[in-house]
Length: 425
Image 1 (spheres, rainbow, N blue to C red):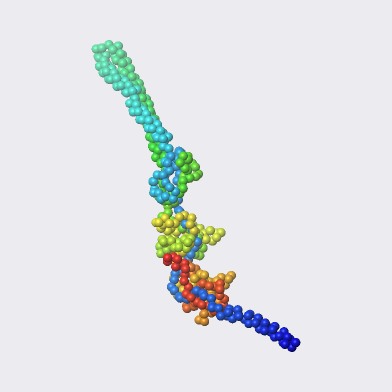
Image 2: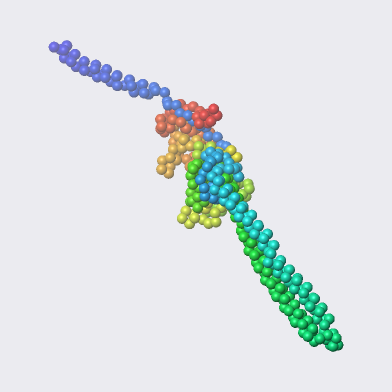
């Protein structure tokens, strides 16, 4: 009985001891787990350029709509969408037969007008009137001589007075005939000159009609007005080309150079005006964060500040010999605002933002985590410029931020930028 009581008391105690031993084993195992591994970057001061950056968009300044100058149906289409074309290169061929028929008709009418002009210059009526006038003048000379001969004879009673009367009458008739024929010649000259001028007007009109018909034949082949990259056709083969249509046949965009527009504030514009334009080189950051190979320059500024946004649009041009850039692409324009000596840069992923507070985890000499409030300045590609909070030699945690907390011991290893490794490969 005593033995059973002792066993009843001892067995529960022994079990509790075993339970207590079992509960402490995991805690000891956790205490003995290795510290988490983090990747760190040691802060080293560097001399770097501080960039000023703006959102930007590319556009084509001299984009041209291709339109027909005559109405007709498309017979051939001579380009492919996206092809580079040169000024004067044929793009469309219209059905030329109606225009050729109009040209032949105009040429025939021109020849008729030339014949009419030649006829007008050689008017028979004028020639006849001039001949009659010449005959009348000859007759007048004869009767004048008769009068001059008879008159002194009558005065000397060597001839009858009746002969003088006949000579005088013939002289008066001769003078009247000359005046009448002179008027007829003058009238014929006026009529002929008027007819010649009218015929010459018709001739010039027909020459213009021939020239217009030749232009229509020429315009039946629609050529590129400028060099550049052509878009898709909006009128297929067999479609009707109408010069008055609001829809163009296609568009051509010159890609070298490419234009970029961006907006700056009034104060930024005033700061830019103090810089030499020739020395201010612009860089264009594309959508994939690569830097475009050519630098640009500011070419124009609009004539007023937008009162709604307080910004002014600037326009820059970039050489684009490879035609890599297209209108409508988005990116960022930047230029060197200043050269900063001894700058402290850290990877962007190392900076943690909590509302207005920016924090960086650093690893101390005892390999323990400490939270360091910092003040970040300009963004430099994949890095932040740290203006306050870090010193040269500080070891900044870049990878493994989610697994650590202040005061925790860690195993630091050097940070390796995987994106740079991929670019290098």
